Image (cartoon, rainbow, N blue to C red; front, top):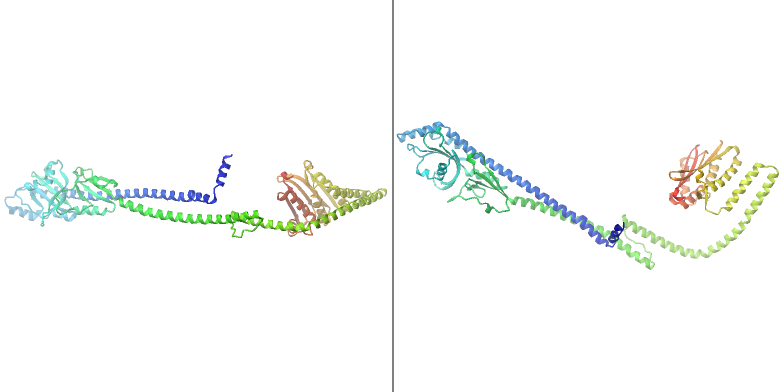
Length: 594
């Protein structure tokens, strides 16, 4: 229980500017920085994941396109290998060169070229055969020592596979002769008796320009490398399909790519001729850096604007509070010197404005009280004189009641001698009433005493109205000792007799009820008189509650003011009335105020 007040006391010791600075740093600046940092981190992860997906999609797209190229070359080689006409003609032995050229011109010349027209990425198709009776030229070649010395022939001879994919350095078959790099599909007649008894090799050359076009299309995402089983770079984004003055094939080296780059690998296929062939993609980190850089710029601008706006807003708020509080403090210090000046600034509608308005009200009242003190000093002697006069009047008034009582006693004696019974009772009630008025000195009386006094008044009214008047008193006996302000009930009963009962021809009834309810002690006076309309009722209620003295409803107004004097706003006072339905006046006093 002592912990919270101790913390609050320490907080109260901190200057207001420091408190606002703490609120600004903890509740505004820090959340803005953390939220933007979290947003940037999240966006970086999203961008990285998106780019990685783009890398994989680009990799898969390039792989599928290269597979399409190679599978197309494989399909062409298979179609040619099943062409029995070509292989039978090449297996035949020609006695004369003219015989071979006749067959070549009639059948073999355009037999292979039709495939290069249908597959534009196939640059050349060559068929090599171990037949000394044919002549090398066009697309058909005799296997001699120069062919056997080529690297692709050696690879095919050393392999047990029927189909191989190889890259190698060679030269162009047409002028000008230059060294280029080939990507070839090799199909051998080994282990295939249907291709005849002679050795035959079909070589289909794939255009590396086409491969490079595929790679160049993906340049924005990846740097691609097509690598053969010997880890030799067949084609890459770094260069074209071939280079002039090529003297060697480059090997792929991971260490030259940079450790910060992500390297993706994908094997071209699961078939035997794809074994060892793979596509390597090196990510382009500049794309991620650019995306993150653009986002970072946006986040920094947004954070700067947020901080600037919040800082300006906080400055304006602190300035508003600080300026008015300093003004208020300055005027409060003047109070010590007796200068009760008003704070002449724009107060505002917030709490500080409320404090300034209350301060101005207090200063104005103090000035008024000071002026009143001076006036009271001037009136002091007049009041002393009035006090002396009041004492003289009081002494004189002591004689009047004694004279009145003596007169009433004389009338009473005469009435008794003449047997005027009813007049005797009335005189007794009147005498008791006057004596009670003179002897009541306490402001608070019991309900029993108030009822006794009120009932004497009712008996006098009963004598006045005779059979046209009747009254009932209902009270909880447990409440008889409770105290209420004197004369709280009789004026209400007198009002009911005067304005309610007197105006009707039928028998008038007044009900007095004193009981407890949820709100407290309830005192109610109800008559069956003529009642009143709502406009008159509202006018009477306004007169009763008005601060201005009025000449109507004096008795009810005195009761209301006396109740408010003792119980303040806690007491409720109500009047209910309808035309020809009577009037009810009641008030309620909370239990804790009794």
